Image 1 (cartoon, rainbow, N blue to C red):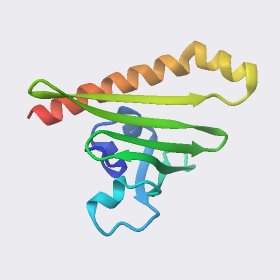
Image 2: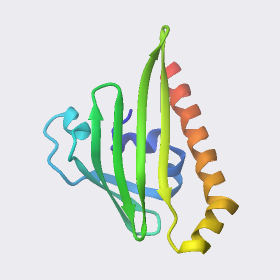
Image 3: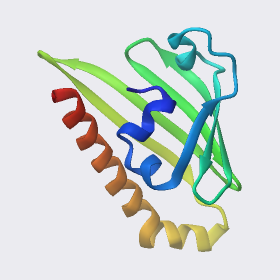
Image 4: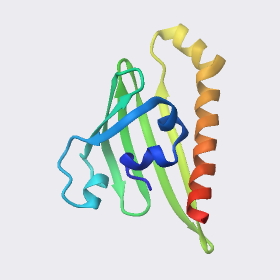
Length: 132
């Protein structure tokens, strides 16, 4: 579920803003999608390409990717933690809006809230899918 080419199954932001995802690095086995250095391209609905690269990977615990599209870039972190008989899934994004003060204003007015809402919806989707 955490491979980037499966985000469209559960990630609200991907469902809204991405047409397709493909790995640009060699993928011979499923685990290659999670290795440090794996690269991918997401084609956004706007037609722009978002490039990504796995920068950290700890099997069944943590996956971090640096993503960039135009002048916007950031990190996406996915973490799994055993809790009792279940698993806690944490999904976070770090980014800095471009355009200086205007970008900070846009982030405060709507971008941060939109991202938080999309992440919350994504977490609910993962839970629903995995509990079926």
